[in-house]
Image (cartoon, rainbow, N blue to C red; front, top):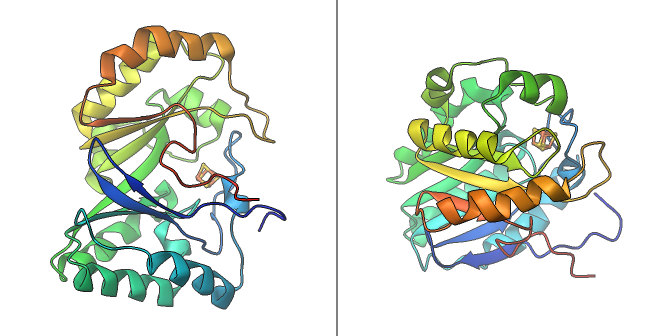
Length: 242
Ligand code: SF4
């Protein structure tokens, strides 16, 4: 865990695709090589400690929209068994009909069985991949994302939704639009995250972000299948309470 980081971990997303969201803690991303990410530091090897945090947040879920998003700065496989059990119980008890989780490509073969466990409860599972871009060379040689598959049709056999990362050097308005359109063509929903400064080598690029604001954002802001996070705390979770 990051000392002094005491974030908001439960929030309500209104507007497009209304849902509750919880930012839980797992034992950490197993990839940890992305050159833009330090989110995985929000993790701990201590299962009981994690469950205690997660339980307190999951108890806030009311089921008001029948839809819940679970993020944990990694993949669903990083969550402890008690947390997963509690999520399932909440789905049943709060009548949640759709649930979103995130997952890295290296766990793609665990997605099918995990989804079945929720489908057996009458819940539609939606699994999101942090793809970041469809440009393979940029993604694997610059971002170091760890997705050794170029074909979006094959990626879409495992994953329902994707995250895209925009606002970094090397991108243009055209490349960002192309990525979002590719995402909409192959996946149910697209989440565009504008790069935020952190301790990693890849930094936000002000000029690219300006291109996004003026040429990309107006084009997709009203599209129900596109969520755009201009700040990484736009969903209401992740902001430090300290
Ligand atoms: S972006 Fe995701 S996969 Fe990459 S290091 Fe961060 S948590 Fe892990």
